[in-house]
Length: 198
Image 1 (cartoon, rainbow, N blue to C red):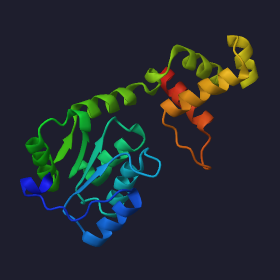
Image 2 (image 1 turned 180 degrees about the vertical axis):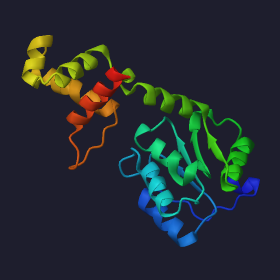
Image 3 (image 1 turned 120 degrees about the horizontal axis):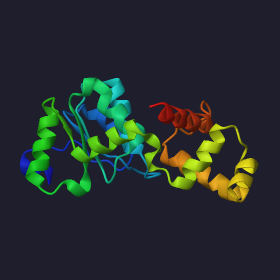
Image 4 (image 1 turned 120 degrees about the vertical axis):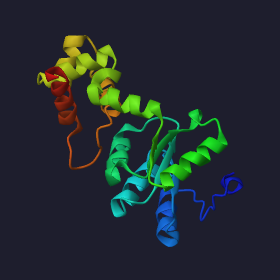
């Protein structure tokens, strides 16, 4: 499709490691990546884009997605002083010529962000807990008060397994990093306390 609009494709790849290798090998004028890439189809493409921009903040990058991936979208959009960057939602790309124009604009140093991406990121910044269900908010409130899973289960007349499921869901919705250096439960409580003080 892109060559029809005068855009030469240096490489087409299927996963994030291949994307990184292709960029290092070809030094393209623009990188277009899907947010979800193999093997896990979560946010591999977006993380690769963030990595590439960390190496070269001037590298033009456009991320395409079905949805707004909160965990790295803000980091990508803030990279390189917000220049030469794009984040577009696939289902809102209706005109191929317009899409090619967006790619050229990003390659020339502009920022092109789907308005829905901006809306969701701003909404999340205002209240990250907004996406939680009422029950998940209750569970988080009790955790913030220092209650264990067993105590929370008793107070809310739930099973401990039910409480654990609610905790898992709210941690996922809050996009808290899953690694050995962080305690996601503590981060969730901090998010809760910040939202109460705003």
